[in-house]
Length: 177
Image 1 (cartoon, helix red, strand yellow):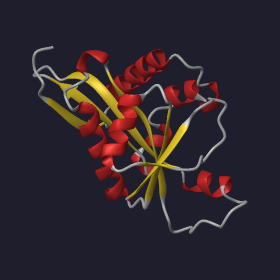
Image 2 (tube, one colour):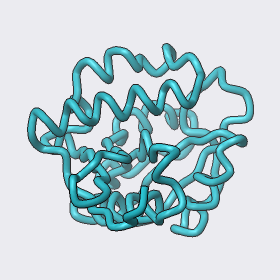
Image 3 (cartoon, one colour):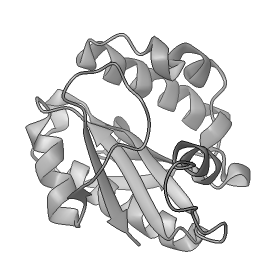
């Protein structure tokens, strides 16, 4: 790919949702992990689902070149209720404090190294500000060093786990918006 020009847009149309589905499935294939515990199949089939703006979510897509070739995605969803249930054994969370989760950051391997991942993270942080989130959470795996570096550069820090997972070594991060 010769052009490094790219744009990031909110997924709004049926075509955008179809593109999201393709990129989520490419992410899953690249990840090569069973995501049944996250109900991934249902997530993909019901898009935009929990990422819909009406639910406080957002899906962002990255396009590259003059032909607008889809090369990446990132999503945001509201987990305030889930987070409150997870933390019942600790200090009760402030119900006015909106907590979001960043999911499915993925750039096609052929488009990596152009700044797309960093731009998508910045775009999702701006979307979180617009939606009124106070804090964002995410999870990642030790083998995803590129993503961990991107998250850290954006201001995410390692934190305690916020949900149960069977994936050993899962790294949990947070960002105060």
